Length: 268
Image (cartoon, rainbow, N blue to C red):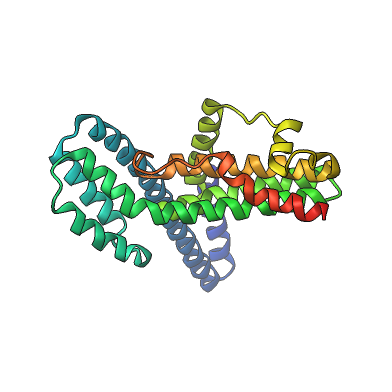
């Protein structure tokens, strides 16, 4: 920062020495640049703070599910409703949640009701995003001629999927927010373990006896598609403001039917 500041100061001095108007123009450009940096830093700070807020809501929800305190549950549901107040796609679920909350007194019931009303439509969209990304990865891997292309496309789709899921649940990660999000997803994948994908799993995916008929490239595509599914599920776990309690957590097996269609069409 000191080196950049000294270089900018020297540049402005040189511009003033040549022409005064050129120096003022350079000073104006420098001011715009500094303002842009400040705005960028502000957006990054807000994005990281929003991601931390989602983490905090999920942690508090876990505690309320154990303590069952009605006052804590009411406050958390109010914060959650405020978080999605500007979302037009959640207008009807918010209205239904307000109606259902009138007869509830237990904190756990409030959290479960909020999850059923607000998280269900978001979970459905996150599943659709994950399924679409997995199909793209499987198809591109099956037809790409180079392994380097496979690696690059899988990394691109995984990063894109994680950002899309995060935005869906209420946070738009910037540069540093994306780094934090990526670290949390990798940490979640490391804790939960990898997917053991062998010939038996591929046979289960495509049908008994059908796996032997498909090409090796298609098998690689299916494996990469399932790994992309794991990234999507992990992104849901680390960005969802409520834990999976009232609703079923998606599993890798839930997406196998969509990927099986790719293998079946390929063999035909």
